[in-house]
Image 1 (cartoon, protein in one colour):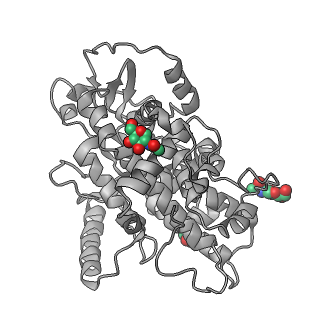
Image 2 (cartoon, rainbow, N blue to C red; image 1 turned 90 degrees about the horizontal axis):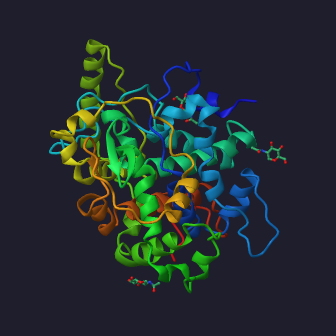
Image 3 (cartoon, protein in one colour; image 1 turned 90 degrees about the vertical axis):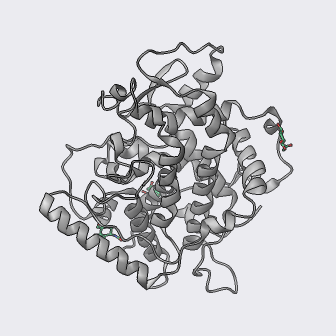
Length: 409
Ligand SMILES: *[C@@H]1O[C@H](CO)[C@@H](O)[C@H](O)[C@H]1NC(C)=O
Ligand SMILES: *[C@@H]1O[C@H](CO)[C@@H](O)[C@H](O)[C@H]1NC(C)=O
Ligand SMILES: *[C@@H]1O[C@H](CO)[C@@H](O)[C@H](O)[C@H]1NC(C)=O
């Protein structure tokens, strides 16, 4: 049996270079999965859920749910260390914010194939093969099971802006304060801002919405109200008219391709000269285009994620000061419940680290619905890709159309 590792990357990698970036916390991944679940075509379930080993005979419980498998890749990361670099892509030289190149002149860190955008393409291709009528390149259902779980997870990860940059190890090296918590920029975006958003969700969302398609897919979790709010105010509200556009990919443009390959060949010459391991990537087609989708997500790093104050005294020294605390915050639910339990406290100003739980920073992210939009885009695109791969519509043989589709609410 070929395992997914050999299909994904072909070769073994040394265990040494375990990268640091952690992932959207559990809450983020499960919210993305739940939003996707709401937009799936019903015919996806029989096809996909068999591969996920899910069955339910209870009519009040969805046949299967994407949220539990959404965090599998993080839990398995320690066992499958080869998969760790596939949770992110490190754009080099993507700042200052005025240029915000993606990537900059020096390309990406890491080796070809070992990044989140190529991993999405890779598992998608693998599942296309698996579901195609033609002879699949493998028949192993366990491999399909893992590929689906990776796909659910990686589409979430690529909507986290700090998973798209190499700067300061994706913000892991930038010490900051969040309220009374000493943390780092990466964790603030993975977990702390989401936990806060869940906590401040208006009370009216604790009541069910009159929309069975939404309610059926909620599971009595701590973030149910938050999903209702993202659906009501976001996907069915302020983004109603743009949701369709999240699913589109640009048509191939010969002129652009030329520029791209020219740029890449200069890049590879540069890399040969400098001995750097920059990579070129080629992930997009007309239907599924992780690189195209990632560009505006990455741009948020320059617009809002990276506080300008981190580049100025007295906070510059808080950068790159600590390389030790890598895989923290994995017990997000515990963290979140902690937050609920604790009494409001007045944050103490910390002399050394920049405070990010302020009206100017956390307040602006909250007011502009930045995180909610990222989670919504991740969910909608995941639904589009899963519908493309697994839906079968009677009398319609071209379900694999050239455009992703979702079931709208
Ligand atoms: C996945 O990527 C590796 C190289 O990184 C390649 O050898 C393999 O064929 C790819 N698999 C699929 C299904 O695209
Ligand atoms: C799914 O279930 C079948 C039979 O119960 C088992 O053989 C298989 O290993 C399971 N696959 C996974 C990935 O759990
Ligand atoms: C909940 O209350 C907010 C105001 O806080 C309002 O904008 C929103 O429409 C309400 N949602 C529902 C579902 O009634």
